Amino acid sequence: MSICPLISVVEDDEGLRNSLDGLMRSLGYRVETFACAEAFLGSPARAACDCVISDVQIPGGMSGIELAQQVTPSGTPVILMSAFADEKVQAQAVAAGAQCLLKKPFDCEMLIGCIDTALDD
Image (cartoon, rainbow, N blue to C red; front, side, top):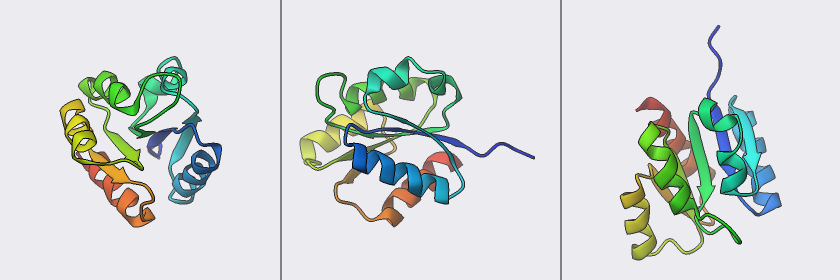
């Protein structure tokens, strides 16, 4: 039996982080959640992770864009979320290698589509 993919959620908002955790688990994924990028980067989940979902703006530390710049070279897909997903942020996300940039609030089906694409690559 194969192990289901591990999704790491990096989101400073506890309510959204918990909601994404529940959604991912309901879809059959294993999930690790983190309040900041630094916590994710320092965890064992970094090496085992199949996909990262991260907020772009994380107060007090590394941004989601910076996280994507560190993670995507290893081949781990990153899905970014932002309430401020303007053209500048979109360009930064693309340059960082992000799989998707979702504008908050987003439809769960859009996120699921991004995850499906990320895990199929």
